[in-house]
Length: 466
Image (cartoon, rainbow, N blue to C red):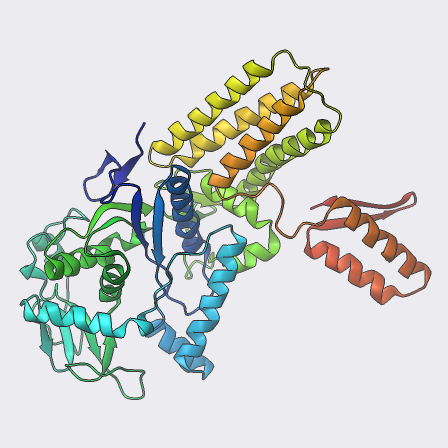
């Protein structure tokens, strides 16, 4: 069965046929690095990492590119507020992004291009558009001539006339048409800038992705992905730029993930419900955050609340506990199970059902439902008097493989082994006997940071994973 992808461009599911057999060229719009990412940014990072993982599981060699916008109005403002260089601020939050998404199980991209390192390609791309008559210079700014591209509006399914009715020319802009958009911005006093044929300045937001996608993936790519909010104008403008400059289609499949709501309200700074991924990772097992994000189909909106997050934790715990119970039982199992072949066949069927769910536009919600079925059968199997080590290992192998596709590790990345926890507790007990309360408190706090909760009782110290 082939993979089917819902294509925003055509508004229907289409069989995935890459440009080059066995290879996938995939570009995902990354963050503007002026602050820590919020959970709305974390969702595409997780979703499209999962898409990449599944494509690799199906045997594709994926060239995965995710850019960093490291010069922008927001970054310049943040740098001014902090009285720091733009590059220093950008690097800090690039590092923070990588740390956060790595905690969320996101694999490193094949390429992480940055605007500031792609200036020659961006300027060259703009020059091609100027030479072809699709762009023009106006007092140091360069604008894209939107009406010069016949297909404008095809991604967002809007006509040029409809779009023009809501367009306005801002103060200081000297563009010919309200729909035209900036490719190059003339430098303001004391603002970071680069030399160009049109004078000192910096790129507009939209042009960077067109230039970087071309550099790393070619004129036409297989999959272009990002949040739903990028459909218009960002991705619409990318299409116009790239297809006008390159003379060919830009991306064959456009994928967009849905919005995140907080307690059934749209996430917004003005509403005070703005949640940073960095804070959540410190408060919760990041595996749970990832599992939660994948519990809803990527194109649907997802509602975030503490209650729903706790539900995701309980669901993941069911799977992890079943795996650990299998590991415990394996030590005393033999290979005498007469039903071994039937179980092996059933597990193979579960793998096929998982693939069927993922083949259907990467339906992780249905894929997780298959994992629950595997977990249920694992628990049933463990109730039998005679278990086969081979069958237990097959259960474990399947859970590892399928959860690996979803990017969820069965063991917490920094989790302590039980014996390590017991040893630290003994060390704490001794510290208290020695009246070294500072050390005792430090051990307790260190364990708490790894979600190990201690409870001092008359019968001794008990612990549990929080």
